[in-house]
Image 1 (cartoon, protein in one colour):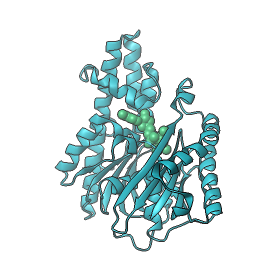
Image 2: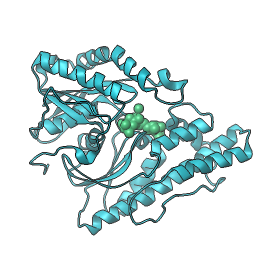
Image 3: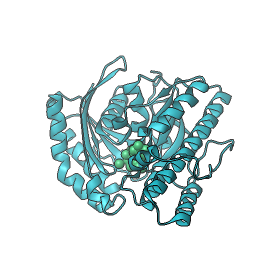
Length: 351
Ligand code: ATP
Ligand code: MG
Ligand code: FE
């Protein structure tokens, strides 16, 4: 199956062409990402109205480039996939409506993909991970541990009761005067800092359900920063290193907990799958590699450029769904809110 995938749920305008073979393997033929980071930088976060307008302006060109780079014409596609949510609704409408127009004009099936499902399934493209697996989804808007037993079979084991982890990175960066998006900036500063200088909390450590809480950590960083202000570059580096060390400990503890929960249910995961933008963080990847091995499984994580938002993950999820007969009508609605648990499944999901 050859699919075009369109992603516009947040601040990346992206399109890609991906092939999925009957044996379940896949190839990315093109993957074009046009990020709006600069459009939003001066506001320190994504401004929904600006994002939607930017998607309108550049999406056509991004799709054209993706098709040209893949050397594929619309008529050669087997289907057109777009992220239909969850996300900023203005952007979702732009991407889904464009996909519908293309599907109608080229007489191709439409696949309305859940953005979170796309993050979840990317490791099946890059690492051929079979079901079941444990998914740790950590992005700007989401922090969840999910038992994935098939397409559309997503059981949430735990989630955050306040901020998402990517959001905590972004807010910490903003507090310390680092540029948006915060994750990469904090990671760079942390490399030069002393992680033992500040004793920061690890909320919910040791709790028996794999939930997260980040707001206490964020507040602790702010209080430490206020105490020593004005901040030198060294102070900022040390705060970032201490913050990142806390995040790494929290993730390790909560993932161990989720692996235990799966084990207690008699489910043996083929992998711990790390997905979402925070998965680009090297310290996070390193610790989870060890946690997975200690838990008798392995870490599967897409390369950093496939952890953050992109079109290939949408095209791939679309192909996975289409391979199981799951396509959508042109009357499909864009959705601002769309929990993974509400994603429809396939009758046959074993491979
Ligand atoms: P969602 O997928 O929840 O809708 P999103 O689309 O904004 O949110 P992604 O693009 O998957 O999320 O990820 C962006 C988030 O990942 C941001 O919060 C960003 O700070 C964080 N991030 C990116 N790179 C890194 C990194 N190297 N270290 C830590 N966090 C990072
Ligand atoms: Mg983004
Ligand atoms: Fe995302």
